[in-house]
Image 1 (cartoon, rainbow, N blue to C red):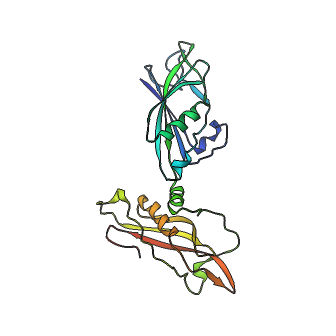
Image 2 (cartoon, one colour):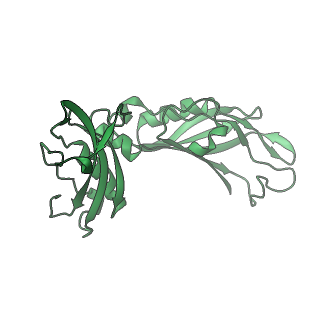
Image 3 (cartoon, rainbow, N blue to C red):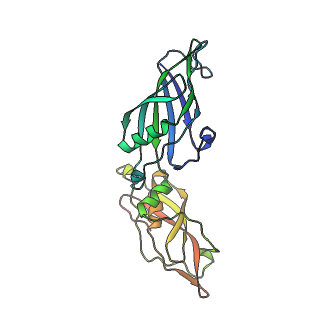
Length: 254
């Protein structure tokens, strides 16, 4: 069996013929050819060639799953006919039914240069895996239930320019990542964020972290914080500051 892997990421936008609606969808095209031989510049022997995608569409991320922060994948089997069109699509497996439906809907619009065998155009059955993912920023926004990555208008004052540090109204303990339970791993994550004029945290970003698994929960912890609005000379201001969150199975953040 001869395998050809084609990776389509945000950087390979030239393969896409319309704007992307969901940046979190990563499409991994895995074409399984039922022929023998090695891949040499996309060909198997003299007169043999694999299907080449000329038009691709990313599947839309199902709204009901995105709103719940659900990620997953779908594996689809289909045939590329002699005209280079996709036919006979079938879901082999999917972590959620909606991922399978979205994947097949996208595949209907794909187009290929058809495969050849001994110089003759042939139909080819292939498989495609669609992976549906969300960035940590998207997941954090979903978890807190509000828009948090927004453009800030007006001047932003740095916290170290103030006579006194912004006053937190609440204290938030970051949740220790489930994946690290019983690992003994401890550490910190440094988060920079903006306190808006109403005292809410917006636009958090990780400045440093001792473990990548701390990233999401550190962002969520910062977003759950609330501060007394900063007022100077009769006006409320947006303030930029940083906070370190400590992670331990037995220790609260400081």
